[in-house]
Image 1 (cartoon, rainbow, N blue to C red):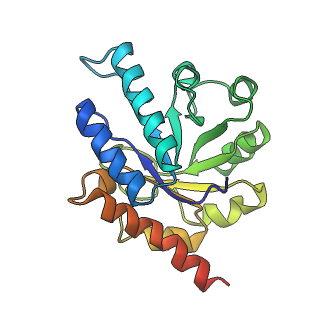
Image 2 (image 1 turned 30 degrees about the vertical axis):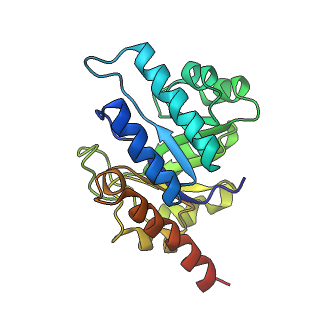
Image 3 (image 1 turned 180 degrees about the vertical axis):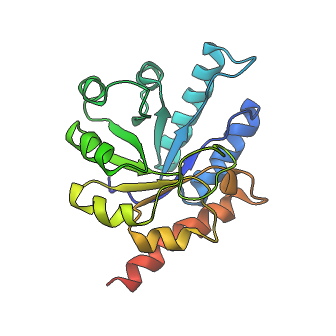
Length: 212
């Protein structure tokens, strides 16, 4: 599967039914990847997380999307997710690669090209840079420059942008070389999640036409 397009990342704090409903609209609208991101806040338990992940995995299979679990290899294996995304402090990438044969492995590289080289060398299937813009999810996150996408092209893996991405600023990221746009708030808080997902997905169609 070619990793290119909208990468929907679930927000924290939604009720299970609301989470599933919004995720369904996101993949129906054109999201190619869906990341289940849950930091196990107050009131959360392992059983609830497992149930949500199972439901999202079934949803993705139904709609031809790929489910990526954030920061939890065990949960990803338990629900037969399509892959895992790890941050800098979420575990060793090479070890994760060994445990996830045939699965997707993504890595957060923040604003650092050196981390991207390390991640690609460890077997990551894509690397993510950000925060690209001010982000309501992580307001204190370091900002990453657009130039990283040109620098990282030599790695030969898909490049993901994350952080503060909206329908208005997304075209600049695609034009700069981002293969994936990881979006949380601007997608899941939209009045029409499916329509917003479609608008993001269309950016890649437009870029493909203009670059040929």
